[in-house]
Image (cartoon, rainbow, N blue to C red; front, top):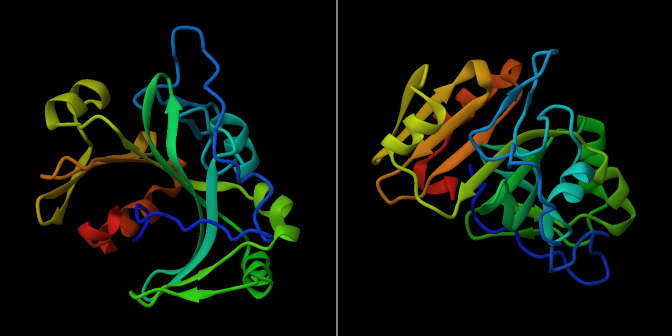
Length: 225
């Protein structure tokens, strides 16, 4: 899983409508209720995390929340399939900063159309093919729902801090090479801890947690950055 390899910038002339470099400052909220550990369970079974509702919020809503300084592309990777991801190199939520990736959930037909209209697909050294988003598809991509939200906090997390903020995990999943995933299925949260101090926090709809667990089990530790 390549979520934390930087997403390449979209080329001039085919850039998405929202690719500007300076996101606006986060609007202050009353007492900060959108810190990474302040995950709200909603009546319909979904969650709200970082101001977004995985499975319902769209990329357009994320842009309104975190600003227009993002990059987005389609990635076709061996063993991973084809995904659309948008990436903010710096996002702020509840006064906490970090890198943010959202994975979108297009229908197979929409995904194939976006890929077919890509102006300049490029193959990377790892064999992944990266497809730029054509500017005519900007509104389509902005309307897509978000399946997965991933935050890499700037500040390092350790077990004691994660336990204090998120509580004891319902399950722990060994990722190898000093990687441990702390799973909170009922709240749709997974926290990845590493010996190198490169932590990740994943958020999904709790009803989609089996998919997230399977994704973590398939991920090589070095590919999660």
